[in-house]
Length: 343
Image (cartoon, rainbow, N blue to C red; front, side, top):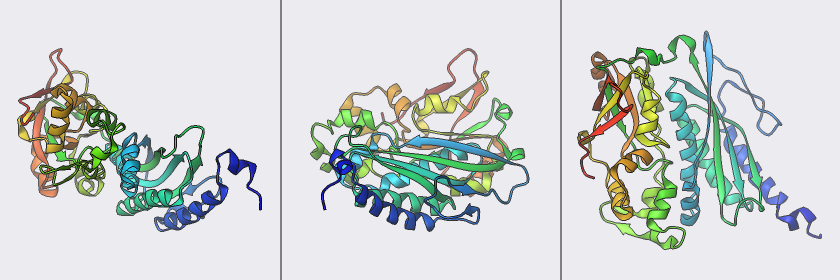
């Protein structure tokens, strides 16, 4: 049988078909009672259940150039976990429960084992939070993606009772800022990290073992994005606002949660950033301000709560610690970071 023109042009339909068969099997394992029909149709259906007056909360995001590190390491399941956790955390700031998830995987050439590893990570993360993977798209675009490159994007929809939507106007001076630890870089800052370590020019640097990390650089960079949904679900009503520390770091993300007349005063000495951040700063001679603007610095989620609710939150989430307070802005910046330790 002769090779098809489409295959010669760079699209392998048979490999795509094999990958989709396995994807469909994995996705079916995440189906919840709201899922309608099977996977693989032109559109995916889901019925919202268990709400009186539901508000749908949606979000889409990508893993970014962490995919390049995954490709160089030949390890792809962790980025599947990354994209789900990132999206779940973002809608969690609206107190939303994740309902369903869709993914987009774009590759230069179809490699079924790579796609399967990514989707295995996605389905594992979806199951952990009771979210159904009900659809997605796998695109083989040899003219867009270079050999070995891939793109991973997620789209999530969740729901929250209208009466439970966070009211940012309730945030006031004297409220407490609590931090929850990150598991590492999560999914942000990888373009800078790749430049600092010269990853693209010398991929072998990813195999460098760092005693202070107790693992190689590549292994440290691929630690999955932490999900906070199961930890925070029991105390959502005790939290006034939440900031997921992603692109833009502390300065941009915490500012989203504050009325214009208020600022967040962060006590940088209340924790010591994990060693990976210090290594990045020293290797790249990055200023402390830029570190806090690009990376999560060991704090993946910031909570804002009334002082009287802090004990309740900490009883439920033992890892939460006080990192600052909300103050009157007084014409200053929305986020102020003081007394940084370890950098």
